[in-house]
Image 1 (cartoon, helix red, strand yellow):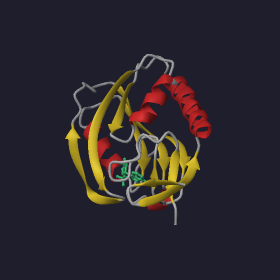
Image 2 (cartoon, helix red, strand yellow; image 1 turned 30 degrees about the horizontal axis):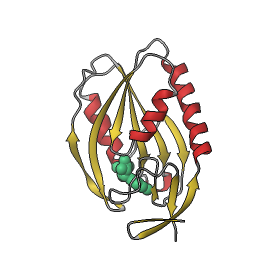
Image 3 (spheres, helix red, strand yellow; image 1 turned 90 degrees about the vertical axis):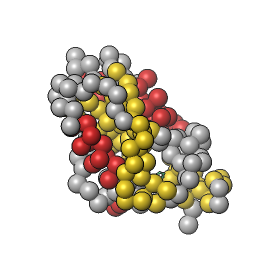
Length: 176
Ligand code: IMP
């Protein structure tokens, strides 16, 4: 058990489990995108550790960039997406992969997809390490999913609770 701010979390996904799945995703993406020189866009802050490990598991030429948005306060969605750092790369006719840490209601991913689609890419696909199917409220296509998880709050491996817990190397689940 660990404590992050005022809440207690229990171990959920350990390092070997995460590492194995991230490597599998990297291999799959490398196979699907060979010859396409994709541009991979990580969603800050949460995806920074996942994208770091995933990008090292991708063995084809790829550009890496970031976008920063925010929709969560504490442990729940505000229902609104704030754009904090926009896209600074040309996406026209490029193959884009959007990389999220977690898809919860799907609101962030819907918003990101519309921002990317405005720039007329050749294709857009989505990657998420974690997916909570029971929390989904928006119809969003998820192309690469690391793990489907129950609708419980998680921290670690980039995911935070009120700003804390991102640097925990494994994923922990709210205990209760
Ligand atoms: P959505 O827009 O509701 O799909 O939420 C996506 C964003 O909310 C993620 O990128 C995270 O920043 C945050 N989020 C959703 N669920 C969790 C969680 O269980 N732990 C930490 N952050 C979460």
